[in-house]
Image 1: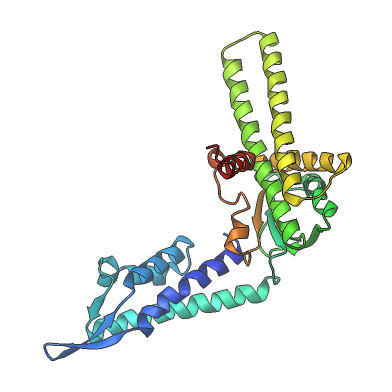
Image 2 (image 1 turned 180 degrees about the vertical axis):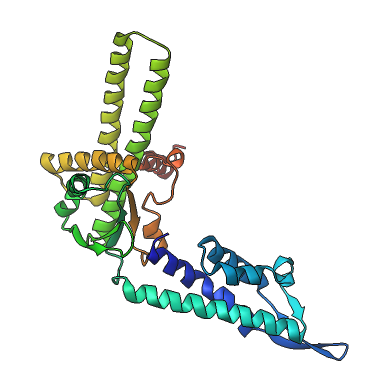
Length: 306
């Protein structure tokens, strides 16, 4: 997990750690004063999320060993001694993760919604492969320049293989996301074609049949790329020249090849949810679907032709 993701995880979950303490209330039962804690479900969820990131495992282990953690009620009454132990551990975890998030944020370059984060593939591990990777990125982002965007490398995230790229305002961001999504669609088709090739070879069929299959795959791939390109052109509302259209096609092909190699394309962590959903982030290949199908379905609904 990269530093920026750890910081985001902490920011999403630290309030769930401290809120349960801050909202504690005194209750008297049979003349004995207890501390009533609510929102324990959120506390347990936040602790588990931090544990998944392997943050402060020893401290979290002590918290998980508390009897209240393994219980299911969202509200529990604590004896004074039990509350003191619970509060000490919860506040210690809150303070540690808060300090860690602050340190990370001081280390990382500040981002805004115009950023895109790209993870290098595992194969980019020497000067030659790095050089090719950046040439491919240049081809992949070329269409962004045609709509007034940019593709400026802002820097590497410390301690990782992630690059921070500034592409520009909302149209450049959405078009970058569409290119990456279309690339993921093509990557899925490439994998499907490879599986077909393996199946055909295992059957021992003649070379003529294999050649015919290859030719059919190439025609299908061209149709897919043309469809994805058309959808992107329509979405931007720009009149494209033949040269610009060819750059979009090359970009989609290049993104597909990069994604197959392990490249990831993510929006800025500060991007709103609707922007994040435009990117093929964390979506398995088998669930990637061409957005051209969705456009067609939406058009049919609008025209009452379901």
